Length: 84
Image (cartoon, rainbow, N blue to C red):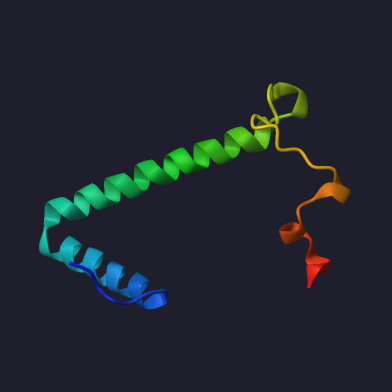
């Protein structure tokens, strides 16, 4: 089943479906609250970890694993802004 809407209307429909399901089934409400709590805790922990311990250049072993390094003058034409 697909709903032929996009953008913010799809977001509103998704929020309506989630809230209707949360009202209809109490177990889903607890699952949703616990999942959002765990997600927020993990996101906060990762944010603080990377804020306090940023990755330095010397810690990264292979900066270009595919070997795709271009000098600024050798960039492909589709990446240059003055190609029009």
